[in-house]
Length: 385
Ligand SMILES: Cc1cc2nc3c(=O)[nH]c(=O)nc-3n(C[C@H](O)[C@H](O)[C@H](O)COP(=O)(O)OP(=O)(O)OC[C@H]3O[C@@H](n4cnc5c(N)ncnc54)[C@H](O)[C@@H]3O)c2cc1C
Image 1 (cartoon, rainbow, N blue to C red):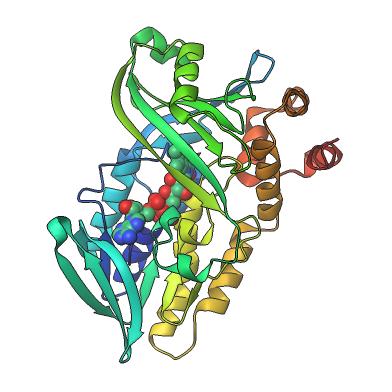
Image 2 (spheres, rainbow, N blue to C red):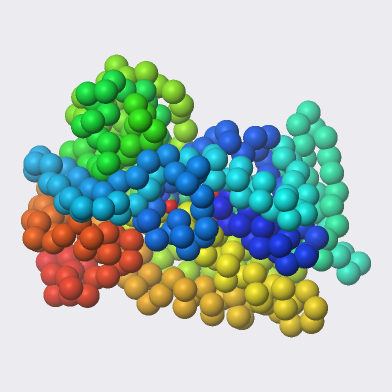
């Protein structure tokens, strides 16, 4: 298992639990470090994946959106709608669980290549100070996220939409904390973040995550992320807060998910096969879901000569559902197109249209992609009218 993110560590845990010999490898030396993800998710994901309270950094019950024209709009629920996780803690906990079930954990090793030779998969890794390691296994799972370190070579023909994100963890005073706690806040509009969005999420009491993310558009000059972040610090009044951590990363998916999910004894998992959702910039629960979908056909394949690929692809398409490609198109249209007054106007109209809905309905729209209720309005939006 290459990559101890939510996808790889979850599959390692499931396979080890089923008695399979698993080696879980990651290039990180400490899974608690380099916690690049904002790690916001809906509450249902905690119970779906059995995640314990210790991984929950904070809970949120409100959406707060700043539109292109300026006013903040709020949607408040009476109970918690979701959580912000300690992402490093999640990776560490999942890997520990896998270890407790017998998986071997190898940290600080970067996978270079893998090939099927003499009836086994031979995988080459490089460690710190140039150390080298060769591992043999029956199967290799590429769960290296946006890097797609191994399956990427099989997917060259499929265009990927890439988002690039930068996030700071800030220490704030009590007054600032109470202004941003209990809610997910997003800043939307080309005057703030062209072709993307900014956010402020509550982490622990007295700590906020402030970030910007935008899609990469090779055909257009784009401002540097740190400039956008400075603007966001100004706008939110958080300039001057102590910076506890700086991190960032890529979120990358194809819209139709038609890329190869593997070949022979090499399979891709999680973000490496486009389970990251570009609309809300979230993928933790989908990465973990891909592990759940792959576990059964892979366990079957260990005792037969059948390829797990058809069942895996089918299961994953079913799990992500028919709304998935619509949400991908909507994401591309919304974020890639957000660079003109006309696009701002369209977004503003959409926000006005959402004013009448409840916080729970906004969650259903953004996390469950329940677009039906916005049918004709959404069609017009997709068609750019
Ligand atoms: C800025 C930002 C904010 C985000 N915010 C959210 C959010 O709020 N909510 C949400 O649900 N999702 C969010 N996401 C997306 C989410 O983090 C990912 O979808 C999720 O982490 C994917 O899990 P994964 O296991 O597939 O890949 P990853 O989490 O990327 O894990 C891949 C692992 O592979 C390792 N690796 C990579 N290459 C190699 C190699 N060659 N050899 C060995 N190891 C390797 C990496 O070190 C890493 O640990 C965000 C992403 C970004 C970039």
